[in-house]
Length: 339
Image 1 (cartoon, rainbow, N blue to C red):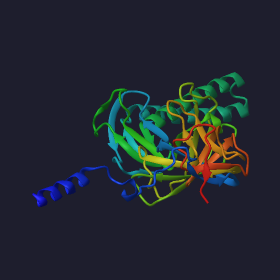
Image 2 (cartoon, rainbow, N blue to C red):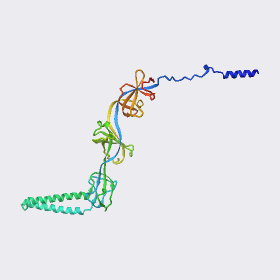
Image 3 (cartoon, rainbow, N blue to C red):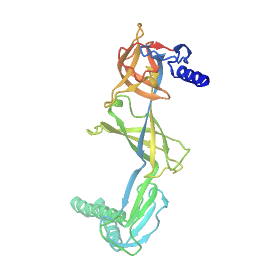
Image 4 (spheres, rainbow, N blue to C red):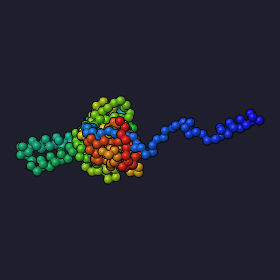
């Protein structure tokens, strides 16, 4: 009985209230404490003003080679992929009409020389001579026109990109016989934002890379600025010409063109300081005030260079911007600066 009473007493003691002094201590964070933040001063730096644009390589000129009239194709001298020089004979049409016109021209030339001699001796009138001279000029013009449309030459140097007929075919004013594309140089049309309208000019240098030619960079320049803007995209075209002397760039290649607009001195802050407002394109930063409150400031951003943003308006040099611990802050919150 004595042992039972003792066990009961012990159980009663163990079931009683614990002594608060013996409980382990877990310090709780003060919910009213100011959040700890990092700050950085806004600085003024030279910011490169370059921009990258996507474009497609184009031939500098595309010539479709065909005669003015239907006719039988007698010769085809080049194939697709051949490089041709300006003036090279590409194809020859049936020569029957050309030969007849050449014979008439030679007869008119001989007759004109004979009458000219008679005019000097007083054997014919001036009006008779002028009539023969006019007939000779007409024959010469007809012959030159037929020659140009019978012996087909390349107007520019380039590469043959299409051949649509075979030897002996009858050309019937449909597709051209050949297409020749000039690829030394090549050109690109890059859509430049209207915000850069006053900064771009003819002669500006452009560096170019092509996905099909990894590791290679080409240099060109802006040769023409188009006078109108696209109302939908608010861009205007700048024509870039690249020498392409090695013929590595080919029409149709996808390329990226980097235009160098120089550099300007601007306010710069780390990109971690710039917050994008949800549902809009606005950008904000928190600026530390002398009383350690965070002021929410609307800013206009420019270039994103490395890990920094160019600030076009809304900040002054030397102002302290929050760069850490500020994502959940509200305007006017008290903060503690991390030392």
